[in-house]
Length: 303
Ligand SMILES: Nc1ncnc2c1ncn2[C@@H]1O[C@H](COP(=O)(O)OP(=O)(O)O)[C@@H](O)[C@H]1O
Ligand SMILES: O=P(O)(O)OC[C@H]1O[C@](O)(COP(=O)(O)O)[C@@H](O)[C@@H]1O
Image (cartoon, rainbow, N blue to C red; front, side):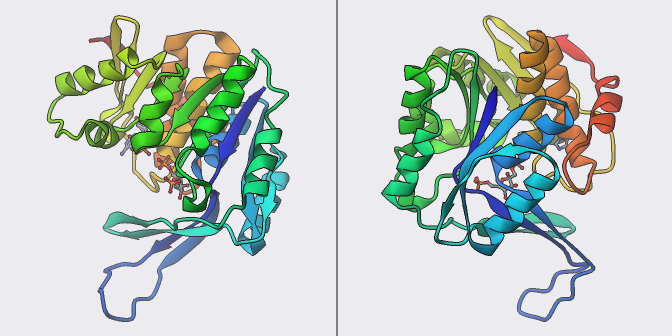
């Protein structure tokens, strides 16, 4: 079974304003409320791909109920810990450019944190746990380490998609996959990256630090897949970008879901890129038909 863990879910409130004027009244031309948070996005795309999975994490208040109801309607298995405080609302403002304003998240008590860890005590070596997104400040920076240690004790594989120290500390525990975008990769090493060659240099450092496979996504430029001593590039298909929120999460879903079904790393890479692009070209996340269409347009070459 694949588990997705979203410590900090969100309602993504997508707002379109034609010509945003700061300090003035602006009227929305369109708005959309979607369940969000990285692991939840991964679960929704895995579901599209027909890959059984269970979403866990923390939900609270009216916003948490909205997300829970949405997941039930899509028949996604879930088992969240319900907390007293409201799940956050993240603003995704579209006005020419995409501007994101993400909340810090609700207060999580130690008893609630323990309840989440308890949901993973029966993991086995056949399971993959996808740990995604930011950590609400009240949980403490080491919470991913606590989750990883439960995965390791039960010999389950884990994937981690987060930033900064939490990602750095996870590498030694040999995650199945890490997927920074090229900006996050540069930030992680405190450098500026100007070329594909430099991305490969820093991507390889993540392998050396312990990751089993590394995907570096580059939005419209596609992605690099770094594994063993090989590096592959995949183009991103051409299309009209509607909403790239969740593109990275969709890529993780496509990769891990396909790897779990086929065991084929390059097919997983292809499905990952197609899923990311299908989401970028949609208002909501990618659907199965769109992912299948785009897979036909992806060329993978060894670098
Ligand atoms: N503008 C785009 N055109 C085509 N594909 C895109 C675009 N933006 C994202 N994607 C697809 O989604 C993947 C992940 O996107 P990216 O923006 O790099 O991740 P993140 O959401 O984590 O920042 C890319 O590798 C690509 O396949
Ligand atoms: O936990 P964080 O880092 O604040 O990110 C949460 C946000 O990331 C998203 O999961 C989208 O992530 P990606 O665009 O990187 O795939 C949104 O749904 C959500 O608002």
